[in-house]
Length: 464
Image 1: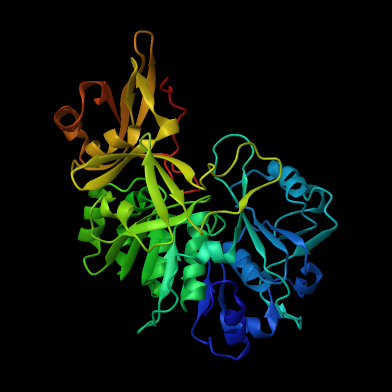
Image 2: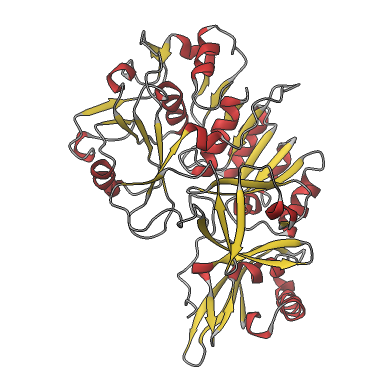
């Protein structure tokens, strides 16, 4: 199946070859073969030919089916995540020159005076439409910034799917699943892996508890599943995590430390555990399959690969054909430097023959002029077998500007917390410089995780 469009998928649908493949959500499961003569767009796909289309649905399955139907039909597809506030709609409409919206939740008053509003939903309905691809569709993703308006990042399907190997035949049916929203980069990668490589896809509902999602995924035979480390830490707290028996587990989106890799290995001994580095702008750079945190230094030195990487001032920079074509609308700043490299802002440290991610440049805590990456401290805390997950943050100090404190979700009984605190602090003193050791540990029942799957972090006191 080619990587530049979904035409081969449509050819297989039309020929009735996909009877066993499906896309499943919280409220509906749709066999791909049903799309041969039906549509979730209520017959409206022909109205969207050569248009700039905003897909703003609550339901992920509806969004997935719309993407299948509209690639090669619409000139531009803009993916609007369900968690993004609706007030951004008018800005997106104006900046991306949207002239049609596909939605299962939007009223004309919300649509920013767009002329065409196509309703979508279930069940799919009979529709005779000309689905002959007529253009190379531009795919636009919105960044997951925590403040301000999102940036709009333009891709082609080729740049999005460049890291997906569609040539290897599958000996057994593959059922993909993900904790991500497919309208974000990480989730879209899994959607494309499933659709382009011959698999099915199980998606979580907008407000579906993780425990219920895992039970449903197990019932549908999930074999491959992905999420951020925070997704996985929360999932493994649930008894339902034992319901699935995946062959393949993939992590991305946050720093992957050794404790979460080891925890997944103990939970799913038959699974191949893989962690990947990617960003919305730079695309997928590489993945790591040896079960260890970080990555071999040789990854930066490899030749013959289309992805080039280097480290400047401690930050990973990437030049790749998978890089976004650029920002859409009135966005500030360029995407690449004069040599075509993207500065990811992800900071690395070399230890022996391996590089380790230590944090984001914009997340540094300044303790009296000394730098602290919260993720580096979390990695040490998470090594303790009685810690589920942790979040390191700054506490303002009149003397040093900031101090390091940590919120910790424990596994242990309440009467053990005093001893656990002492053990965590001992671990930190043994593994970290003095200014990185938390001055206080607070035990909490849970930590807030954003819809993107990443820990919600407070703005840090920045280093100078």
